[in-house]
Picture 1 (cartoon, rainbow, N blue to C red):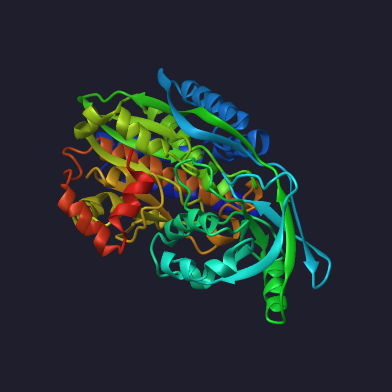
Picture 2 (picture 1 turned 90 degrees about the vertical axis):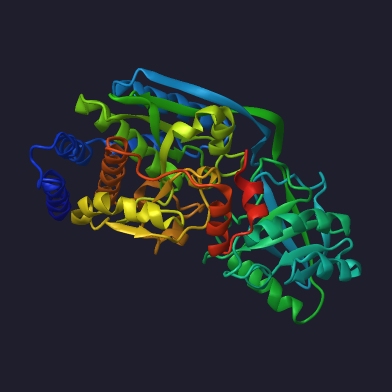
Length: 483
């Protein structure tokens, strides 16, 4: 406990010393105040409330609605009066039910499975059939195996079917489900690559809230390996059943709060994070920490007493996980105002050690951010990386040519919790959370109060060039993130 207190006090003192090189600067004083306020704030308690008390926040669920009301109340308690909800319609609400599976032959043995999100139920009696292993989901290959697929249950070798160096490979997997159904398969199983047979989340690329065309389940890693060993010796028959509830078109809301600018209120900077989560864990790192960073930034900036030159909009996105993403729907709603959006900052990479910002492929934005990044060096968060994968809500704004940044944190332990049962409050380091929240708050205020726009909007030719440099398919990216 003593070591933890010492670490916390050390970071607070660093925050107080930050930007002390210009003591007469109004911005410097504001940033000092923001830094100290966030470091001494209630970010840890806010995260506990969101994850322990509200819990998993599947978009469209009652828990998500509770989370929106909680977040709006926190914005208002921070002294922000312009707080409202912006509703849109998801094609389908979805709720997980029971799931079971077992090997029928050559032995009798239970299997650990779970339905994927927005997957349909199996028929009431479940499915039963021989297993077939598929290592290539390209349409031509699947059509050539139509005889082997009919009436079978498909086990996908994800390591071969979706190579790690293939950007947005999950979109190809998504497209294969309709073809599996067309060719007569009964269901699909996807191995979950976390040890100890933990059933969990596998990305199906289903980012528009649509119900998948065929029952799809996750299977524990060790059980998947067992099935593959049996397949080397002969036919394997399994049966499976899962029951989910599909509720049809469902209303969800982005939560929006705004601090009006003091000199250029028509121009605005946006700080966002998605409020929804998957339902197996409680969405602590993905994305409770991001939500808390936005709330703490709003509270600390409002407490300064002097608004920055430009307005700041704080937005907690709905439906980032299943879609249609709240960021895309925000863009559609505010299309006539986008020319006044100076920059978008997004936080969706958890709260491990902060490293800086992803500048989403823009060299000019990286260069313009250097003076601000230099001010974050004491936190070890002065990094500016060109790497990005269009994997979160900042991508929707990049596609519109708007300067977009995504909070950059150490991701080395991310796979252990990302969308997993273990994505819970206890996995978050309090010091890293407070430090990350400080970096986010300070950066947001600095951009909003900057003498000039941090960087210009760019045209679609440059957007396409950025996506090509990242080896991203424009059509697939648009399918995921365009409104």
